[in-house]
Image (cartoon, rainbow, N blue to C red; front, side, top):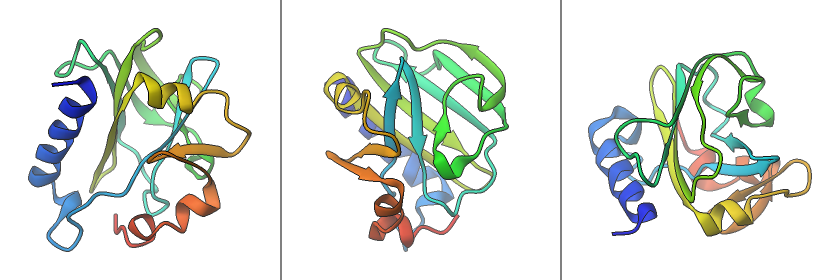
Length: 154
């Protein structure tokens, strides 16, 4: 099973366990991603206002994160940078990974997605304000207008 498939299975299992994917929202919203200078920035639904932490797993470590953070200090309206610039407590690193699984924790939800190398490549050095979302390149406004994003309750 490929890393991306394992990530999707893990997220589906987590979705069944966590309340963020209740009966009325069986398909979680997509997560936008961009990579600039080796730093990943993710975009989650705007209903999320508070972030408890973030974890990044690579294709070799699906149980223990290679990077984790607590104490969000950034501005999520422009994306959540997975670097010390947006978090007060950061451990580990994810440079050089061939695939990543990203999780963003909020008090009531967990947002996550798995990205294989071709997704990370497609998300690299996009124009300012653009994110790779489910095979498309969207700006933040278009992302926020996606039905599964607009309908998400955090």
